[in-house]
Amino acid sequence: MAHDPDWDEIFSTQPPSTTAGDREAAPVPFDDDREESRRDRRTRERRRGRSTGTDGAPRRRGPRTGAVVLVAVLVVVVGGGAVGASALWGSVAPRVSALFGEDEAPDYAGSGNGTEVDFAIVDGDVGSDIAQNLVDSGVTQSYAASYEILLADPTMTFQPGSYKLQQEMSAQSALSALSDPANRIVDRLVIPEGTASRDVEGLLVSATGLPEADVQAAFTDTSTYGLPAGVTDLEGWLFPATYELDPGKTARDYVQLMVDTMKERLVQHGAQEADFQRVVTFASLVQREAGLADDYPKVARVFQNRLDQGMLLQSDATVAYGTGNTHLVTTTDEEREDASNPYNTYVHLGLPVGPISNPGDLAIDAALHPADGAWLYFVTTNLDTGETTFSDTFAQHQQAVKVWQAWMREHPEYG
Image (tube, rainbow, N blue to C red; front, top):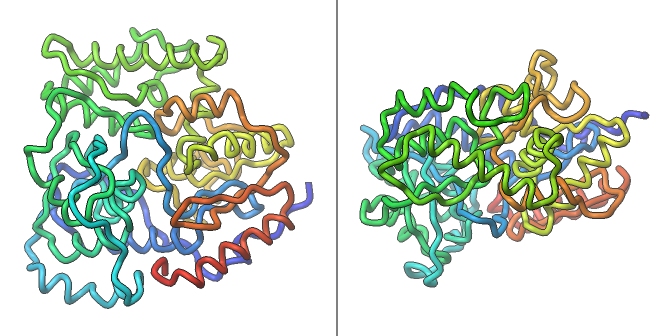
């Protein structure tokens, strides 16, 4: 196969070189340096849009426009810091202006439209994550509206757990609601689609109050859950849904329930038992890469076409997972060249060696029933709506990229 033009020739910037940090206990202090590093990365995601890799392979860049799925979205644990709000804002205001432009960020008015959304707060993320995820879920209107508030007020603290919000809330009302313990859901365990198993572990501890040691033991000893032969990791097998809490259940009971639910869903969508692990792995990739609900089967088709043609998948999501980063899908040049990473689909053919998230119904169905098409490439051409263009050839893809670049010129608030 002739090598396609290098993707990075199209763009003049590269993702900054950063590494996944250790997980932090919640609440965590607002760390401006750490936040800036993550924000820079997300800025470049938004600037590039979700697109394709160095040879045009699927490469997710940019905000994910939320699909309508069983539960809501991962949000972030942000805490108060020692730096005063005015001092912090003074230090970052120029950068925020450069990122979002001078115009006031689009924002809804009021406290929502009455449609409830469940949020699961996962330990280890920063302010840029909560700002983006609020948009993804349809709670807030823009990334900038929430992120500017978080930067301006480092005293805001969110505890891990599940919270009730509504669609179409103002950024201030949404963040205030997340700070209010009265909005915490205490009778349910919410696992969002695409959550990694280590984050499910944290959510289980937070929601149930079970001893962390018991939960860790339940996640470590996987021999009794009826997983496929040779599978020793729960990744991909914890079905994301909302589970009722039961004080009589142990940590192992909850894990078994999630595994059994995943098996039931696989059968319902038409998977054969002998193929369970491959389907879960494929679906986990689609879950991390797709945006709009209608795009899931198309993204699955892109990956399937590349598998059928012996092409590298080149998914940043798989590479990032192999580095220990389960929250972002951006990677550096060095990470994409690292052959020692078994999840690196830039250098290893085929699907990754295992699942990279816990997929939901939409992704499972897409993996089993990809859309019809000859697509090999895709790029998001409108970051507000998540509209994505799928192309059969690299020449077509280049034209789609030009559409995206024109959109970016018309929306300087995305950097």
